[in-house]
Image (cartoon, rainbow, N blue to C red):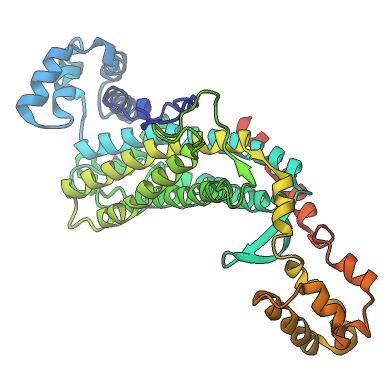
Length: 452
């Protein structure tokens, strides 16, 4: 299920909603039941023949959907009708060993994490594509000078490539966070009704370990149904990623305003921005990202509330966590697809960036002029001299260069020719180009690793 897409851009479905759909979840739960049976048979807790038959019948395609529907309607239980149908399908007495010793949350939480792990891999692949696109963008824009802005005002010159380097740095850390949290998040939980593993006898933790091995997941050290901090961590990591996505989109949204005009979203031919204003070229994709990212962040409090589970289990908090997981993951997949589209298709307007550098008629070069003058009179006195000229310009007395050129505190040390060179903003972008190039290389290496 994709979110509403008001643009004519084709936004591919990342497939996250399908991985979290009910049938996919049921099949994942059956996969856990099959793995449980195999683990128990290895420890002689159930007959090996029964485990083989259970595994053979853990295929949702074999199930009678009408019987399942009736069972769910009658019981109101999330798993029992599935267990009944699995038991009925099994030949001989194998059905008697289905779900042996387990409780519902053992199966559903572990199965859901199997699906979430697949979703997690989708996100990492998407981030790889985003980083590859940002690497190209950083190299393309590393020397495109534009005003660096602090507090919404012109500060010193920078390059667009430096902005891109910032995005790369953030997204690269998100990759690291997602990779690092994986072993903590995607764990098998099999502790029985209250986490004591009593239903499995002395072999309880060994059964969990073997189940985990079959599912290629680590076991929970303490298989308690109340432990949800690792699930909340995953949501928080995705919310932090969403914040960076929103930041990225907002920068493009702002830069696309006519007052800036430095970038534009990729807008397909025929896209209509307004039913009444034919001239509109609206930043729909950026707005989608910002809206989705905001919704993702609102799920963090719900996930944190779910961590506060009382006693040994509480259905309430399980439902809260699942709601947060579903909302966050579906929105995250759609968000990352749009981030990739923007990163790959953003239109840069270097001529407008350059024009914006000249909006303050040289004031953006106050810092390098102050530093040059400071070599003769000290930094503080140089600051005062340049400050006086800058503030006079701000109230419309004259131009920056004229005021400085007429000030004997300035012109006795620096010539008009030197001042002309110092007023060129393209000469004062610092290490912007170098940083952009370095981050482009970093992004390419990481993107390749995520694609392999």
